[in-house]
Length: 126
Image (cartoon, rainbow, N blue to C red; front, side, top):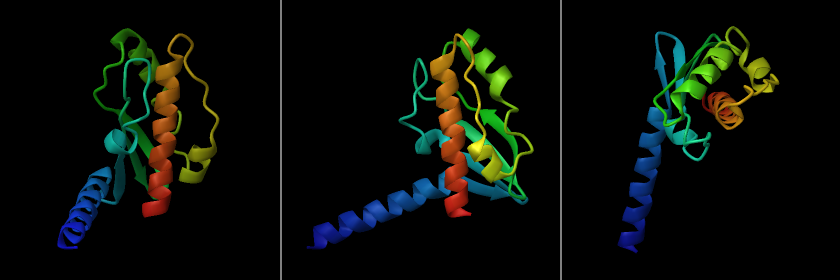
């Protein structure tokens, strides 16, 4: 029984630690990091982690974190998608229909899914 309790306690602490790293707040801006949140969301070569910055319930910016995507194609995704949600209220940003970049569909769809995960996380944890 003691082992089960310790395992439960360890799991709870681990989940708390992960949650703390998923969303932080700095000077009124919430920053949602999708590294763990979207670890199963893969583009063409692997995960496409992001940081989504939200202030006053509006998306400020999207920051692309290190990924294993092909740089030539991922740069196109960044250029096309990076500012698609800027200035939108979280609910509007969550519902916005965004097209994928031709020739980089998997990477684009993974980025779009990570943005939505971040926005959902923000809405349920703010």
